[in-house]
Image (cartoon, rainbow, N blue to C red; front, side, top):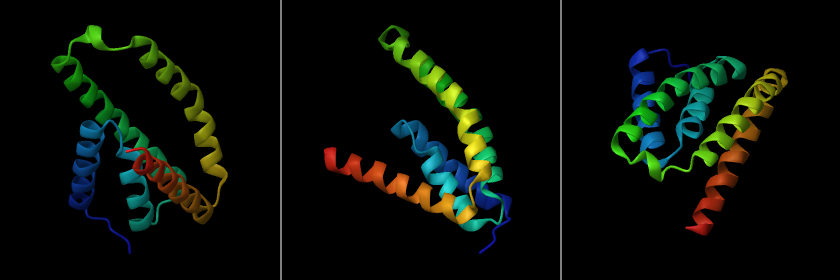
Length: 124
C-alpha cells in the first residue's frame, strides 16, 4: 500500500506530535513504522525525514513546556546527558541504518518497539 496524500501525513504528524508531547515520547515509534509500512521510501530516507520533522516537533514541545513549567524544577544534568548522548549516537545510528536492508531494519524496529513497550506495560 503506497500512500502519497499529504493530508495523510498531516494526520500522522498530528497524532505523533500529540503522543510525543503528552507522553514524553512516541514520535519515532508511531511515525517511523507507519511510514515504513505505507511508503516505498528507503529506510534511511524515512528515518531522515522523521528525524528532521521530529526536531521541529521537539523544539515546539520544549518551548511549550518551558513556558508552562518552573525551570528550576528541571534537572539540567539529565537534559545535558541526554543531549550529549543523543548527539554523539545519532550519526552512528544513521550510518548503520543506511547499510541495513529494509526488511531487516523493519524487523529490528518492530522488535525494539515491542520490547520497550512490553517492558513499560510490565512495570506499570
